[in-house]
Image 1 (cartoon, rainbow over the protein chains, first blue to last red):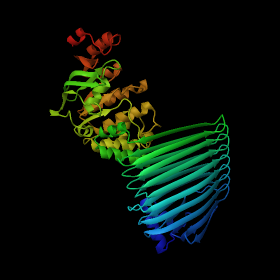
Image 2: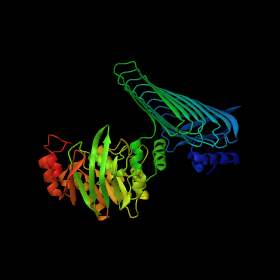
Image 3: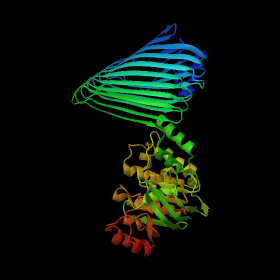
Image 4: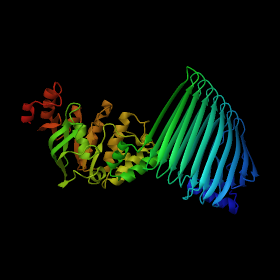
Length: 316
Length: 246
């Protein structure tokens, strides 16, 4: 059964370029939340997951609670967008994943006509003991680049829990992106933060990922892939702190410049506060690897086609 | 098919290839034997036209056309390709996509990605959806590289030590790939240290110090390589009598 209002249908259609399946967004079988500017168009839980939404003058507040032990068969669909060319959308959210639960979220954010749009996200996420949460967020921005995306997330992963997130903004003009995620991990917890952004024109991208390995044997990965074309400027700050025995952390950053005026910087920060913690990092900034390009050119691709294949693959 | 005429290449003031003359015939499997550092991979790079490998003298003719100044991709579109000894890795690109790229840009009639993997001894159901990234072992990556050469169906395949780091049991797969390329009408320039693989060649050349010493019957060249090159104390500086006797 499809739930639909004209506005919800319009919003769900706007999510298609971000890779969303409009039918899935509308289907009553799936839990989900859809917010257009500051109007909640859909707020639906299913057995084991409760979603509460509240409209605010500039956006919405949402509380999402997954009961302990619940394992949802399908993803929870989240959908945020501003369809007019200007506006502010501020989403304040709380995720509470109960002990032993397993849940994945598919979040789509679309600003297809943006000329002056601000999209602020403030999320508090608790992943309970032994629980697993995956959060995949894909953006679609229009060609004008008039979007400011300012997501801030604080994630707490309790003992034996795991949290994996991907943030992907590769379609349309990114605009101004300032992503700031911090994760705190208890013992045996796992966290992977993965951000992929394709910056063009005058886009400005700042990605800050911090993982605090507070529990013994906790493991964290902060991974970033950025392609900066034209006059795009990107900055990546990956921080990992090993605060407990046998904590393992890694920062992995690749930034590729495809324009002579593009700029990139990477600041990995590793801090070991326990002698049995082990932290590593790798960062590569510059043009596309010559050997990759020549390998593809030796199969008949032109240089531009080869660069496109490498870049698209990396941002996938 | 391919003629190298007086190819000379220097790097850092040192001559890497010196007046190399080589003729690869149509559909011929031609192996190049030489110790490490004699210029075999450099020769492969020069023929493919990789950046930094532009000869300072000489010319390269491919099917009668002078391709010395053509970029890599234009040589590839004329039917030349190269399988690297240490192939590049590609994040986010599946084996199926990698092989399909080669097939689409190559000549008609290339094998399907699944058939190509089968030829190199990799199970399609296990490998097609894997990424061509660091999760593949060195041997697996080299076999995928050979599969992509097959998918392209080239006129000239340059195989730079395709047997390097390959499980001995899989060497037969390498030989099978070389024979398949030849059956498809491709010439193969084969750089190898493995005598069993080199034995598949129709002719062979010995390279020393950036110079072709001898060209001829593969068994005779292999003997020459064993007797002169493996125990040679002056690698890369061949004695006058060796060059003269070539």
